[in-house]
Image (cartoon, rainbow, N blue to C red; front, side):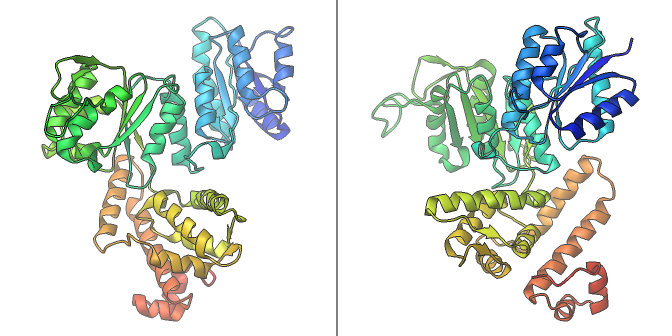
Length: 470
């Protein structure tokens, strides 16, 4: 029997092309321009097996429509679509019972394949219908994580799913990528959101004080302990504890942390009372914990406890397309703080930012944007302003740093099964050299070629006929 699929979207073009693709795949499709019309049809039409629904629609949005569908049939599979793949949208969709979240724009073949995968859920209940719904975007400024790169969209979907699951999460990524923001998003969208979120950078606390900071101490437990101190685990009871830079934790504390994760109980330093807590632990590190385990510097059993699910935050250089979006937000925040109009990046200024290596990642970009907002003259930030502040930025790349970054990138690419790793690395390497040389010579190609040891024609060929870099 042909499965019935409903497509609900106020965008006529999306409705048409998606419905047509599904019909060509053999589904019986009905399309609606809004949630009210689709709900009204339930009174007179056979129920669907699958529903595709947009989130942001006039009248009733997709999440409210999803709630209404689930009230009528909790088992109905719903796929939520949205052009806004942010955490609020994905988490709201999965919290409401969505089967999957489909980011716009999407490939029609992917949408059809997703419908086919969703159909067994309906078939298992003896039905022929599958429901797909689309998630609505929330205000982008309400959440600190921002990005439209494929890796960030995948991260947002993962956060939306994981927020509802009481699992330990290990967040990995270079310094400055925003690992604590991921932890806060997981907490904010979880059932624990009404309870405390406690963050602790384990690398910032002296080893001799870290145990007390984590587990607390009784009065008189050690010199200077004049009164009882409640540790971070007790403070986070019922909520979430974020342990940053977990790879630097001393070995004895790794053993104590393992017991808490396994048993949910511990003693304060110098105490005899067994303390029981219900805490979700989210850990983060910029280090390779698998290598530290192999070197005997991190417990393998602790890693297994922490690494139930691993989320990787991509470095900023891997999502250069997000730099304009991030810079606009940082400049707007700075303008609000300075009580002044927000400055905007000229196109050539944005290109320079996108060509930068960003060893400090998003944190470095934020610092530079605040500096530009405060010091760049006028309301438009030009290439000269960016050059000045990029060169003045702290944390310049040391000669050995770029090889370490290249090694890490290659290791990730090979682990992901990506093809032509050498070709893509060579192209990026050459582009970085050419961009740096042209910036140094203010776009003078002949001088740039001389400094690089290339002929001018060779440089022009490698640039592919690009115009002068400002």
